[in-house]
Image (cartoon, rainbow over all chains, first blue to last red; front, side, top):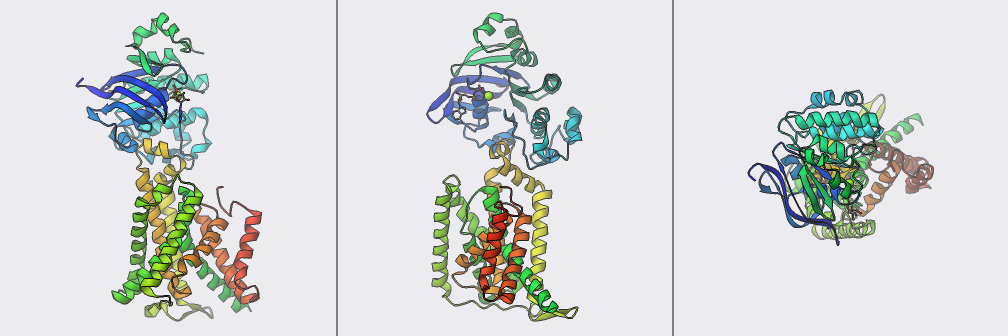
Length: 238
Length: 287
Ligand SMILES: Nc1ncnc2c1ncn2[C@@H]1O[C@H](COP(=O)(O)OP(=O)(O)O)[C@@H](O)[C@H]1O
Ligand SMILES: [Mg+2]
């Protein structure tokens, strides 16, 4: 796989004694996109935390641009181009919106003007403190903050969780726009299978610590039988 | 009477500024990094002895010995942080207290061994000696210098923490370590630098203190008490809080000793008890 951007091989990871993932392999090519599906609690967040280096890798390897990064500290992975957006959003509460965007920014295609025109609401809120935002604004800020680091892969952990339908629509459109930007790859963890599959090229389903199913997103979208088998995947948006 | 009041206010403010420089680093490490570093008093004492050595043994002018005190205390503290303190970040407050107070004992014994138990004299440049006349009052020149230095430090700290990218990274790392790391902040280094800055200021405070309150091996203990009072009255992690608290306590201490000599050194504790009774989280503290 010469053009693999992010590659996991036979990853076993978890918390202390509790093994959550046991034998997960996946590949995201340069500029590619991958949906990660699975029921609540199967280990999707754990997978992303393992990629970022926050969870102990017990076995297997994580490679980025062909380099083994299994032992790299999280901040070095981020600087290498992994753009993680945490499930809890984790907005810095004692920083203003604009400071949230600039404190960790790195030079590249995305700058303040760029993210403000993607999310005009953030421009209006630029002087607000991080803890004075609505849920939707927090999610926009979390995504914009990561974009400002100019990552080569954007890793989103349930970005639509708990948001009002109108915000969900807006975010889906924005994520779609980002994903079609040349160059930036996308890993999207999402409960709304239909949305995730519509935004990505490839998809995997995690179940019992392994990749239970891997397919092209377009094919899985039409494969009602497989989707049904992994209950909890809501194909119909609610 | 008015004249006495002005002089007492002025002297109290000067003493308060000294307390501020000594304490602000402790407020930062305690409030921002949740690390109970009682060795802060030892780093202050280290700065004092660094200035004594720099002026007396190396013949450096007093003003040049001040940055030396800062740098020595900062470097030594960061060596301790890298090798020892960071093992204690998750060890609980009691372990932190026991370990760092132990370091103060070690520092006091080492200072007594190397320098003896006597007070260390310090040679000041001409312009810092004597008094400056202003509006009919005679102000101690050194105290004016102390106040100016403390104001400059306060300004730089506030600017640095509130208006620079490094300051924003410090606050981000404090708000959420994991998110900060995940976005590329080297949290360990940011904390180490913050720690060094705080200890360096303690060292500078120790150097500035010699002329005003003297320096002997008990300095680390003696002033640790004042530092804890400033930090708890001001509120953890608040530069402005430390500033206000230190000014208030400095004035209360000097005024108490002057106007109510029977109470003597007890005044500062009285003020602390009253303030903490009304505001347990401190004047400007976040929690
Ligand atoms: N910090 C933790 N310590 C121990 N177990 C955890 C921790 N975080 C998550 N888990 C467990 O790991 C499993 C996977 O969780 P998670 O990765 O959050 O799932 P998902 O994101 O797919 O909902 C769950 O059983 C959860 O209880
Ligand atoms: Mg999750």
